[in-house]
Length: 376
Image (cartoon, rainbow, N blue to C red; front, side):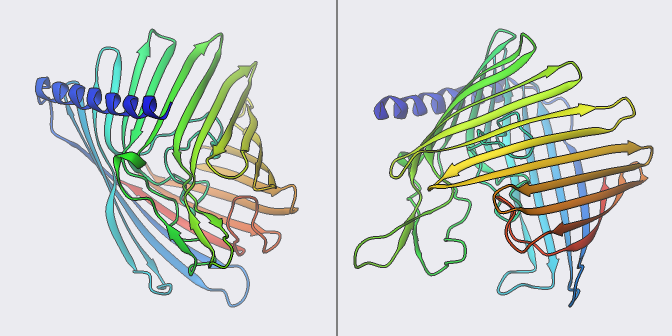
């Protein structure tokens, strides 16, 4: 089985490169690149003494250039924050995503640094295992990876996807809270590349669903203890079998998503999500989602609730995360106002009922914040 999967990875990589080269060679230049940007300024203040104030500025610049049946995308992300924390730098600047697309008659190909979003649930997607999570923002966008992503369309309903990741990228490179523990990172070789396949049905009897398989490594290190030796950590090999579906019953949208994880060492574990949403005639949308995961003989039961409503230039959101086991809660109301077609002002607050983490969310302090977003 291992030899077969290894050969399959190389075949997908070779076919992807050949298709891409052929598409670029035959593609005429149609127009100049499209450039867009978004600037976000954030100010955050703690809601209790000593009322620390923090700020951050982010600039996202993207370039997209179409070449007939192909396209080039480059996204650059820069940030600045204050006050400085520890030895971290005030500034960061780098390439976020950079890839080339090729659109064939029956296939789509993407090669480069990218995010590959799988799953039907909202924000928490157990089957989206190709990109490591951002531990500083677990519910936000994941970290981009270098990958070859090939979609092959089997008619109008079915799609077969193959993904190959030649370089392993972890979510963290040390044990959180234990920086002195030695973490062994696998060498960057083709033998340590990761591979995934997915078969998806779109609009089949009013339902979207998929089955997926992933073979690679966990993006968080696991601790190992040996007799008379200091504790060490490494990234375990893992196989993940996943499934998801989304459908509607009347005006109610429903979704489900889950994975069964088989690490090379240790016990198997699983993660599942059930959720739904409903939109009212006045524009109000409410949603609810239940997450259950079991790993290392510990379980997490997290309830996510949300609502949003647009009122002309105003829009309000409310988000709630509640850990059913720890009885800890995060409450996040937010109001946004459109100052202009490309400028948005956002006021919000986050309230934590305790200092314990809420499910997979990191510990946080009560605070208020204001965002200014400008697109150009």
